[in-house]
Image 1 (tube, one colour):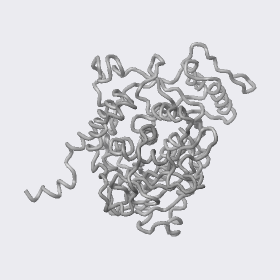
Image 2 (cartoon, one colour):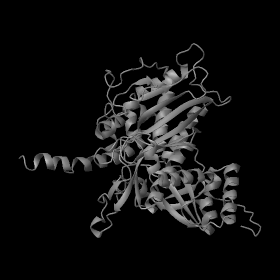
Image 3 (cartoon, one colour):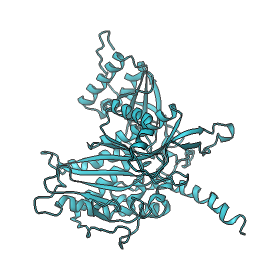
Image 4 (tube, one colour):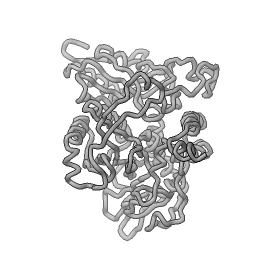
Length: 487
């Protein structure tokens, strides 16, 4: 940095020089100037792991130029953990299961910050935030980057002069934190859940009284979201106890996925600072809890004209693109569930008559169907709402699954079945009832092995299999109540 605030990154021999163009270098230099001008002292350099959880390091402002040039090192075991944060690959073997010498020995990989993602965190003093792409220590791409998987899926649309637009509709729960359970007895991989209590009673959907009771925290979250550049459309008191929903305007390409990562972080961190506990767990384990979903509104536009390709022509029922896209989503729904609903808990949301899907089907403006199709002639907002998603899903994998399945429907010219009117009485195929069923479908998917590659399918399946095995080996409260005294 020079005295007048101008910056110039040296490109010679750097990782950035190998993967960036002039636009990225210009954006990085603008970030360096902003950091200096705003008095930012520290920057969180993070990446989204296989679960969509951010991990990383905090670098000082003086170290940021170096981070932009050559990345920030982090142990490769971060890519090999299940949801208990335990490493589930044999990293001390010559081959951990990904190929000889790949991610062995807990060696470093590199986080290269994407300068376009820079934000100043309004709740953290003089602190910036950067989302990173990840590379091997030698600067080569790794096949395990979920952000890269979405970028590659978007490139498939680019090749067809199409672009993807999606809007986020996210339900979650905010509770009063009564006991964080920070005693030494809880210092294990899987900690005891905190003790919480409700902020509001449930089952008064969209009543103004409920919104007013939640106003302090929802206003704070909305203001912070807007300060981060997130286009909030509405904030709602949802159906369940202490359940809320944020809805965002549609955004192009990669933006909604990056936004989802930061939004979840913001909500959880801000609520903790306010003495609250926010959870994106789909169905919390308290009495009368309502399942939370992540409804993904999606459309495809003509990349040259911006015209919505899901909008049917006058007199047309569905556009050809929308018809094939719906059929692709349905055809690959079962094997996609591991990506849209990656938690054991998420499958407990698939209940009939609960405004959640339980079958693989589509309907017109029908909130009981998996796909709620809202397409009409002349409607520039024509879209498909997939209601299958878990709020805890990795957004890169969830959104990529939609693009890959939709494109396959287009490429094969698939035609959807008749839409349903009674979604909980139809004879459509059921969604998986548990993670194990979804995992098997994903592992055996010729489609995902073709579009994602064997390495990534086997890698993700191995991680989720470890989680599923731990669940099956644990004695539940239900089993204790059912059998302990009976037998």
